[in-house]
Image (cartoon, rainbow, N blue to C red):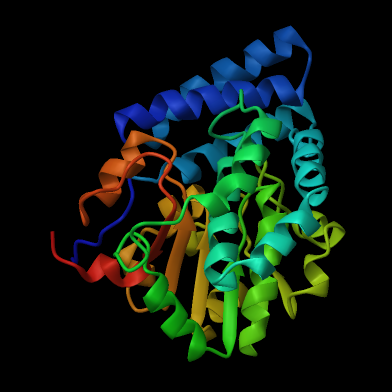
Length: 313
C-alpha cells in the first residue's frame, strides 16, 4: 500500500478541538444543563476518533451532534453576519486600494489572505474592528518572498494566464467579501469562475446563501456546494459534482487553514493545479509546512503551490 502524505491530528490539536466545541455549544444553547450534557458527550466521542483523521474532519462530525442536541441549525449565524457586514462597509475602500496599487492582482491576493485572520473558529476572542484596521493597512507591508515557495505568486500568475476554468473553494465569513474583490481581479483574465461553499453551516464558514447575499453571484459564473459539513473540504466525503469540477479546473484556489488541513492530501491532490491561500494560525500547521520548506512563521501570508506535496522530505 502506498504511503500518502496526509494531515493528521496531533496531541496539541485536541485542546483546540475541545475549546472550539465548547465555544460552539455555548452559542448553540443558553441552557447550562444541556451545555454540560453535550460537552461530556463530545469528550467521550472525541477519544473514539483517534489521530488518523484531520482536525476539521473530527470536529465536523462532533459539530453535527451539537446542532442535533441543541436544535440549533447555525450557531454562528449572528457572528458571521457581523463579520460580513463590517467588511462590506469598507469594501469600496479596499477595492480602491487594489485598483490604485502597482500590481492589482498581487494586492487583491494579499487582502484576500489577510482576511483569513477573521476567524472565530481559531480565536473566539478576536477583536474584529482591530483586525479590519490591520487588513486596511496591509498594502504598506509588501511581501518579501513573492517568488518563494511560501508565496508562489509568479507560478500562480503563470497558471492563471493559461487557465479558462477556476474553482474557488471559499472559507470564512468576513473574508468572503475580500474574496469577491480577488474574483473581480481574476475575471480580468477572461476566466470562468466556479465558487464552492460548504453544504451546511459549520462554525463561521460561509454558506452559499451568505455568499449570494454579499454579491458573489454577480461576480462568479457558477456556484456549487462542496458537499462538506466540515470546517474544511474532506475530499473522500465531498459531492461527486464538486469532485468533477476539481478534475476539470485549470486552477483551483483553496482558501483558509481548514481547507489546507483537509486538502493537504497527496492521494487526492498531487496532480491538481491547486494553490493554498491562507494564514497559519497555530504552531502545528507551521511545523507541518516546515516539513517541506524552511521559514514559515505564525500568521505569515501564504500562497503555496499544491504540487509541493511531490517534494521529498
